[in-house]
Length: 420
Image 1 (tube, rainbow, N blue to C red):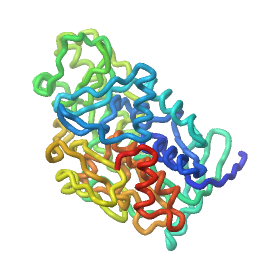
Image 2 (spheres, rainbow, N blue to C red):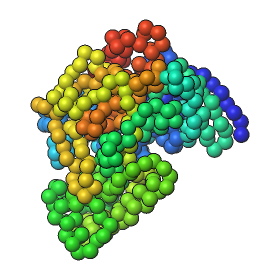
Image 3 (cartoon, rainbow, N blue to C red):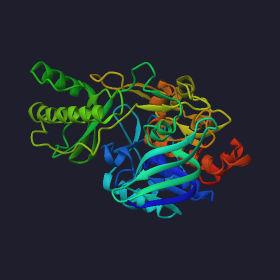
Image 4 (tube, helix red, strand yellow):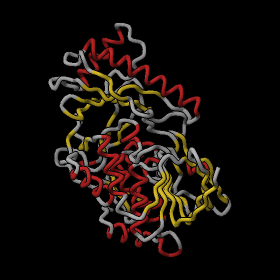
């Protein structure tokens, strides 16, 4: 096995929405940057777990305003060029979402990244992080692919893994779930086609059907209601099979993957039997992986709180905006509970929420950022991930010396077209 060594200004681990935004944000400052992704495409759960919508680009309600631009806007414009984006649609609860075609997203993210001098390694998995915990500085990450082994060093690192894998391997302080052994359930999203355009998926209709199915003897169903939304005229995504994920071991994840695939087959049977217009529907995908929602969280220099989110607080040190309601998946059997931001407004995310506490060069993006359980239920979505990712990438690139001041990061983000 060949050992390959290289040094960068910034290394980003994780190629989802937040990771690709972090890499581009860093590159736009002139920093050299490497983006590492373990799967064969960018996009994170949008392209591997059937999360076929971008949530969080807009505030809630029928007068939704766009609150995420910058790199996220470049992605929307590329999707528009491909004929896959022409504005948001409203979900059954009034959330403004961007419906996605997975193959278009894969290609669009590639195309946007090609515009910038970012080194990208797909099929590359980080297996070790070497760090000095006393000084709070990561020195290098060790990665492998199916042929070679790599040692990458950098001045600064961004954890955009979704599960705080880099922070975990470095030895940073973390919280799992809500910190009390609970948290939000994870969900497998089903993509089904051959669905009649006449079928309606109001939560009350789903609850009636799924409750009857359970009474009739179906034993492997969890959700008794949920969100089902259309991707096109005959294809829908059903957010239904759910499970608790208490840790990230292979043993646990294997059980959870198998459990939710079994649920998926039973939901398919129920749709065939109980939902007129779905008699011939077909399960075309359950995703490459289960949609993980609430795992490890970095403890930051600051922690975003539910109170700040719900009351639309806009602090002076904000580097990103959020506006998605607090979407709480606290019961595997029930539909998500939504708590909306006051007046359908947006809130600001302080820079300190992206910086691991006690660490000099570890920044966080996406659902790994420092937030309490209520705030996390809002900031975890991918639209917001584009915003926190770009901010983390810029902060990482400018974090050497005095250039890392909040005002400097804010000015650079504005120059890059981001909304802060």
